[in-house]
Image (tube, rainbow, N blue to C red):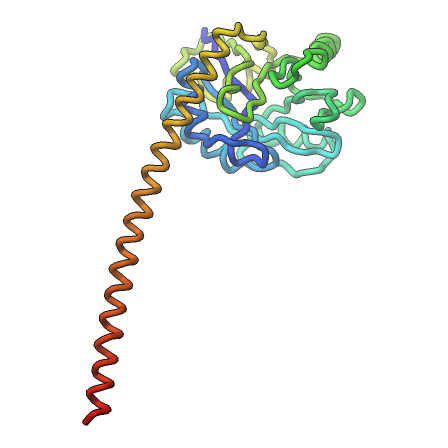
Length: 267
């Protein structure tokens, strides 16, 4: 049996409100002990697919996804390889996700300021996000949990991280029987969600732990951008050298041509 820890709701720089490159998110997720993260950018899927393809390099399970805007609120499409139609009715989008092999999860339900779906518009879905780390008061998380319990929906927790230190602040434990960790596939994870083999992990971290996560995240981010900056500076320097050489060569050629014209005119 395998028990895995996954964060199903993370935003990258591919999202209009995200800030972090997927390479950095994957590195951080592996370092803090997660088994996988799903990049769920708003209405775009290209960075999520790239993250899923790179995940194995970091020892993580690769699962693509997206947070799609429907006619009735946001919806997580987990395990799909293409972008669902936007602004379609909620139930039609759920059906599309299932037809394409994914699971449909309701994120931050009932919170209208963040495009959470209303209770009356929730159709038959695969799971409810009952702990979202961005909901500070906890009331809407409690309401989501009561709703899921009342209607028998599987529950998940997620960070909804938009910056690196929040990745993994809430996550879902997935239990997969009779499969070793190294052999777990994204299909196994999706099946476990559908079967309700999930446990919510999203209590507020103790202050020392939170501080440690922030410090690790800040240091890693600084190192990442320092390395990227060095490479970019070297690239610009190389480009500048090549351009200078090109300009010098062009100047010499023009100078010789001018001299030839002058000599011809004096003859």
